[in-house]
Length: 268
Image (cartoon, rainbow, N blue to C red; front, side, top):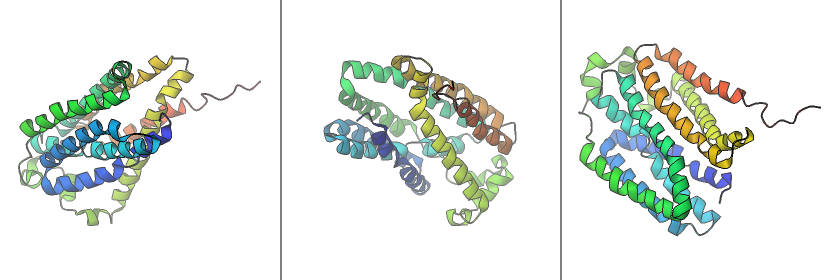
């Protein structure tokens, strides 16, 4: 079950569910979708150890978990932040998304502890129970949908680009070149991020780190996410987004290029 193919099988579904979750969020509001998705995500996590009796069933169960996990991605939370905090949206979004990095910092050590004490099956049950008892009630009691029409009533907070986009339907947007360029950019960026996260421990071991330390490299990634997202959020409020976005998308290429010659046999 440690084969990356099974991880890929589980990770291949979130794209479609994110698309569906976004459409449902537009129709029913973020609170309902986040509440139902968190509940389904928790129950799928708890049930996975009981459904996974072999590699095939594990891949199917993991795919179900991935589908519901994608529904509670930043799509809904981003709409909440933009709706309730129209001023300094960059800083607001950067601060909110920085908490993802805190999770990345904590997860490697937490998973190591769970694996060594209660095993992977118990770990899934415990994490699912935590989502059920902490995340779902928090959404129910604390989250409220933004005021209706916030994107059009308060024009003082909207740029020219925002006003133009608020008047485009999905079908109209798909007829523009910008829509497909952005889609391709996010696709390539997602592929690079996924490849990097999967291969990062192997790259760290190639540099001479022990397996335990290699696993903790994800915590370093999480720390950088916290700082960089807050910084980028501040910069988005002050710099032209197009230039900043170009730099952000280009930056990972430098990191990958630094590992091009790693693992290559030395020429005698």
